[in-house]
Image 1 (cartoon, rainbow, N blue to C red):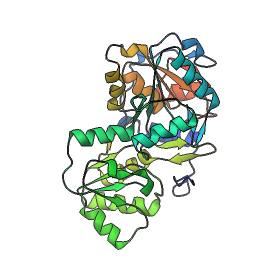
Image 2: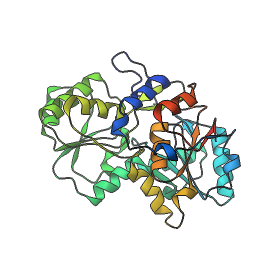
Image 3: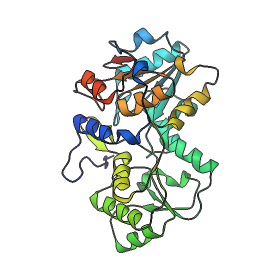
Length: 318
């Protein structure tokens, strides 16, 4: 299958350095970090193995930690299995929202990660839980490719997909709210009409995936969070975000293990502004992986100093 997530926008091709700067630019829209006197001094490790007996629950981000696009990391598959054999609780906490929950579980099982549905929390799942708990009135536009099965969303909806036509513009103007599941096939022209309709008539905008970028092997793709913040700046509409770094994503993990203190949970991720920031705010310990993912090739100590987000541990891979 050809990946159709955008890899550039208005001539800008995302790189790890560019993405880090973009996260810093929207830092005041993200959750607060730890006070200076509570920030850890990161311990450098070769991998997660020295921590295998230290925690009861291990929570893994997906892209950049377990896989890059369709490619799973062999070392991650091995470590995942080792922890399961040790009787540890293992979870995947992903901002993925294009695929339904069932399809995402199937995807990671095909890659070699032996998980069950209750070992995965995705931002798509978090959105669906919110929709089930609080009905959205009226007709909503859902930004998602056809293969994303948006019919799993419990609301009255219509698809919003390219190309831009006068009919699409009229439909956009009539929706009572908009949901963005995926940035697949999204482009500058579609972004312009989204910003125009929200400027003309502000309405709810709910974003399943808060990520600005995602590592997909040899490139970074632009994700819904990037386009949502552009829409916010253009229209003044404040999006509702699901997924990391926001509290509901991490609270969903904690609620699955009510008998385990958050300090006995290790959040493992590749992004300071989502995985590490969100995990720390939830009271979890954190491990930043650096060999692949959003900070690949960057000066990690400098990134920590600039962002004031410091993980408990740093390792190139798990």
